[in-house]
Length: 253
Length: 322
Image 1: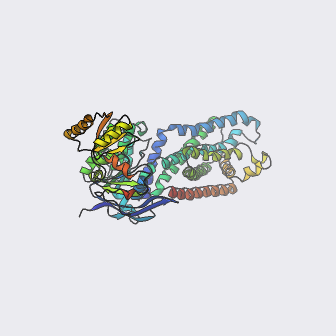
Image 2 (image 1 turned 120 degrees about the vertical axis):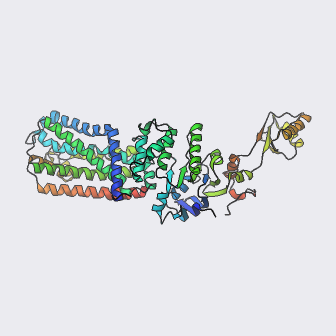
Image 3 (image 1 turned 30 degrees about the horizontal axis):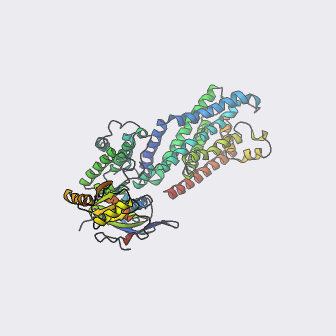
């Protein structure tokens, strides 16, 4: 008998499974990295010149692009979770008394890792395009923390969306709002330049404080007000996603 | 007394208004093959789901490997292996990785050659490192069953294990099932194929519209329906009439223009029948000797037009008292 607690051991087995899936199917990582980079090139090289944001556009846009890289990779997770549920393999795990949460935590952790890879790629390309952050080592650590937290929270929410969807296709579609939200935030232009209505939406939607927190950290002048709101949103998402995912999982069990 | 591996009584399950299982009960002896037979929608998969702890019944008791499925779920799960109707293999993993995943989850000691052994046994060595998505239907089923065998479960549930397989793969699967039983495993098998139940099962239960309409050995079930007979087909009603007059004890079907005559199937009795027809210059367009198989039992018992499936008058069967 193993001395490692069962749920933990099961989760690490499932994590290995999901990691293998990701490696076998590099297209999902490629897409999650490529699309945000295309958007990045478009905004920085095409539109950016026309935007007046007070400093270099690449410095302004990078935090938003990081968030976009995270949200763009979620569709693959929702699809994978859903096909796990519909393809019968889940019944095998259930009959084997695999700890219930491990199937889900495996997906969440892999999603988080994939988001980190995508973010690393974005930062790499940003540097190549002249990104010049003023962040200290501590600020960087904070920024990475925010990225991990957001990825983890979005991961749980996406797992829940994937579980709740009827088919793999609709599961992928369910994450589209999460991909759209960064566009309607302060990711690419400051919220106060937007029209009435849009502006209020952009100011109060969750991605804006998260992006502002990242922007503050990377610029070397973190704002604790934004940070608290950002962390609260992430914690809320994670909790909502977790509760929703677990209850849906039980219902489908 | 033989110990029973599975004991079910008064099992009921309904989805809303639709009653799927209407109080079924049966007993499976340890080390035997039990086959649950029934048409699509009879409730076979629901029964498997309840027995394998995937689903809760509305009423009734189910003991698997001596444990109650509701109160001792963990012990039941430790004792069983399940191969569902749709191959539960991970498409993105290779055959070897799929088996290793099972071995890890079952906490098989590393160094135990179980994965290699199963790959060899199921003739999957050549494709062991290819993703399961590239496997043929038969290979997927084999891999699926191999995955079920990791950890040596005492009781194996096979839900329509050969549906969609070609005849050769089906026979290979039968061979594997027989080997398992020879090793002492108990097999609970659902199938729509009567030949399969006939070939494999020690006990057969026929499920129709949520009720067990018969159970017994394949031989017992076959005895319930009309025995061996010869079937003649005629060109028209006139010839059919004439033949019905000369062949005593025959049963006619005017629509099909056929006449069914009891016979033991021996050449001498066939010759006698044919001679009788010849004497009266009656020509049958075709004739065939028909030995009852489970198909006949099945069709007789699961006839959707019969309102009460237990009304068949055969005595040798164990009709479940309703």
